Length: 225
Figure 1 (tube, rainbow, N blue to C red):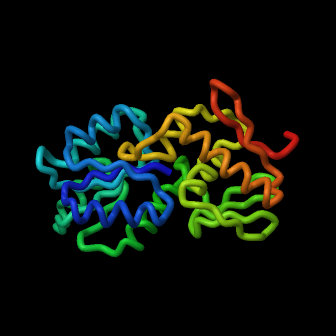
Figure 2: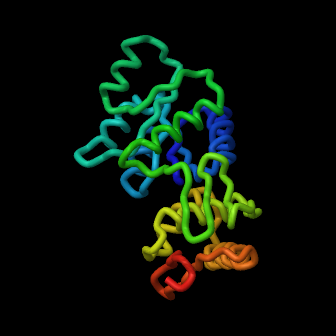
C-alpha cells in the first residue's frame, strides 16, 4: 500500500514515515504544494496524509486537485488548526478525515486503515489465496494456519500481488508499489525480491505460485491454476 505524506516539518515527517513503514505502508514524502501536485499527477497512491500549512500554499489546493472528476483517493488531513470552521471546511472541501496535532501514531494508522476499508477503496482485513492468508492489520502471513517469517518488503510485495491475484502485474506497478521515490533501486532489485519471496513460499508449501512473464511482469495464482 502506497501513501503520499505531505508534511514540511522534517522531524514530524520522519516520525510519521517511520510509523507508516512499521504498519506496512510504502511512503513518498514531500513538504510543498508544488511537489505534492507533481506527485499525484505522476504516481498512483492508495491514500494521502496531508498537512494544511505548507510553505508555498494551503494544503487544500492538493485536495481540490485530487478531487477533480473521478478522483477518489482517501485523504486524511493532519494539522494543528483546531477550529470548528477549519474542520468543517476541510471535510466539505473533499478531505475524508481530520486528525489534530499532536496525535498518537496508533490513531493515525487506525484512521488510515479505516479509510482504506471503505467500499471502493483498497484495504481488506484478510486476503486469501490457496492455503495462504494475509492479515493486513497484524501484517502477518500464514500457510495452513502457521505464521511464516517475511521481511517488511517481502510482506509489501506479497500484499500487492494478493490484491491482484490471477492478474498480470506489470513490473512498473510492482516497483511503484513496493519502493518509495527515495529508495535506490538496482536493475535487478525486483527480481531478487521476487526470488526471495518465491523461495519462502515454496519452503512453507504454500499452494500458490509466482509466475514470471518475461518482459511483462508477474502473476500470482493458486498452484496449478
